[in-house]
Length: 166
Image (cartoon, rainbow, N blue to C red):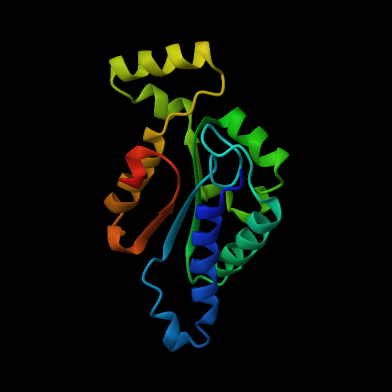
């Protein structure tokens, strides 16, 4: 059915931030980096078979506005290869909400840097299923952000997978 849990959580987050009216109150925003998973949140995936596109559009418009105002950094993460991710983004008309430098997926560079056993497993999975979703990409993005000096307390992740939800 509908991805009510994630859509509701994103909406509550947006509503709270929009309640912040002054620059002084903007300091109250603790989670300044917002990572949103493409699959099973913004578009249907293995778990969530249907999403409320109208609600997703409204939420992304609000988050994108906050990103443009410099109040948050909005990041899209996906475990798909770039061509699959690009197709899903285009099919759902959501690319305009994210800056290109803030869209992350399983690139060839990411795959080539994996340990040999992980790289071979990834390549095997891709041969069997071109829509293979490597959830570990999301962990890598969070690790990169923290190594770049962003405290984990400043990051909020909206997703639907065991590695990043735990």
